[in-house]
Every structure is written in structure tokens, then in C-alpha cells.
Image (cartoon, rainbow, N blue to C red; front, side, top):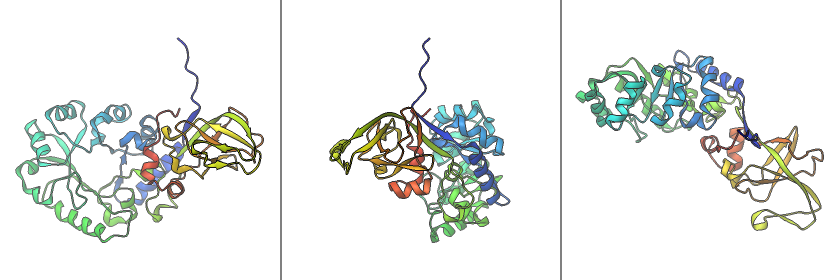
Length: 344
């Protein structure tokens, strides 16, 4: 069988930084333990790359969104450590949860009744305290179906944790009021930004996601979180262009002088959107500015100050998430989850 050549782009994951970030968030959670949101393929960085690192760092609570995400996580951690945020919407999903042993997060009265009718068992329960997404209303906590649930973790989700909003305290107090209304073992409210709000938001279990992977949603976390993801691409062509020649679609860049340029095999199909125009790649300590528009599969770079760069060499796109968000106007969440599938 013919061996496939190696890819011309890769996503380097700093596993030490990932483990450090989980330990830092666990410490910042105080008496609570930190879990890990590993949904969306660990925010785009890869379940197989990230979950073993988080597990070995000490994490014992993992959260996915879709049932389709369960098998990949179960390759690395026991089923009882995995919770599915979107819950069972039909008997087939409820049966799957029981068969493999993961915990559904019950989000509605319909899901609660479905779970009880199928035999019940350990689950989590999401209460909506103001974000108005998934979760039961606090008024529904007295419903017989809810009262019958075997709740491991009582949960809610902050809407404005990355802001200094009065809504944070309102949600915290609403969640506290709910705790006495239903039996449960542990309580969980804070995401990454919520951890930075302080111990009043930690309860028993925190659920960091973004900051595990290098995101800094609040300035209080800046000294504790390290960059994890490093997109890299090979130079696939070198060329000289003359004064007055243009680069790329719509000829948005015109060479002010004769220039040495290079093409890398990376583009918006890989999640590097056109909003990156005007940014730069790096080769060692040198900056290689992007010229013109980002194409689907290619980006042209100014190599005027890097005469030693050759075809086949690897260069790096700086992906410090707060800086990249400012450059592109994309959120740090989007910058991670839109990374494409062609990275090796």
C-alpha cells in the first residue's frame, strides 16, 4: 500500500502548557475540583492529543456536548467520568447513555421524564438561571420527575462571566437558592471566566474550557494561562516579484519595490480567515508579514528580511489567543474551534 506523504501544515500542541493550565485552574478553583470541557474535539485541538494530558494532570470530570463525541473520549477515560451536556432527547440516546455508562445532563422536563421512564440512574441536572439556553426553570425543580432524579452534579451556566456584570451575582444567588430544592451530590456553576470571579462561584466543581487551551477571558487569568496551540505551515514556493506587481485576489497589495515572497499551504479552509490580513508569521525571531488576501489554501508572505528561508521550511503563525482575537476581531473561542482538519 502506498504511504501518504506527510502534511504541509501541522498543529503543534504544547502538552506541558495544557497540563499546567489545568493545574492552575484547579488551584484557582480553591476547595472545588476542576473538570474539563472537551467538547468540539477539545475546542479544535484534538481529543486524542488533549484528553490523556488532562487525565494525567489529574482531571476526573469531562464534559462533551454531543453524543457523537462520546466514543473518542472513552478511548482515554472511564465512562463514569464523562457527562453529555445536551442530554437525551429520545429513548435511543437514553439507552446509549446507560449502555456505555456516561452521565446525561438533564436539561428539560421532557428529558427528565424520558430518563426516569427508562429506568433512571445517575445523571447531572442543568438549571437555567438566566442565560436562557439549555436547562430547566427553577420553578420546575418541584416537578415529580425532577425530584426522582439521581443527581450527581447540579449545574448552571454563567452568561456574563467574562464581564464585570451584575448578572454574575444574580445568577450565583439564584443557583444557591436552587440547591436546597433538589437532592444532589455536587454543584457546579463556573466556567473558565467564572473561576476568575472568585471562590463564591466555585461551589464543588468548576468546568473550564477555553482557558485550558490557552484562552484568557478575564485579565485575572493572564499570569496563570499559557499558550497551547501553534499552527505551523511549510513554505511550498519562493518567488521574486517586481516593483508594481500585485499579490493575491483583488490585487490588494502592490509591491513598493522588488521583493522576495513565499507561499505557505494554509488558508481560510484551515480556519485562518481573511481577517488575518495584515498580520504576520514568524521564522525564529523574524516576522514575515502577510501580503494581500488570505486564499482558501494559500497565504503569501514577505520574505524580504528572511533571505535564508527555503522551500520546505516550517514557519509559525503566532496564535496567542488574546492577541489573535484583537488582530482578527474573532473571539478566542472561534479562533480555536474553527481550526481545520488538514493539520497533521
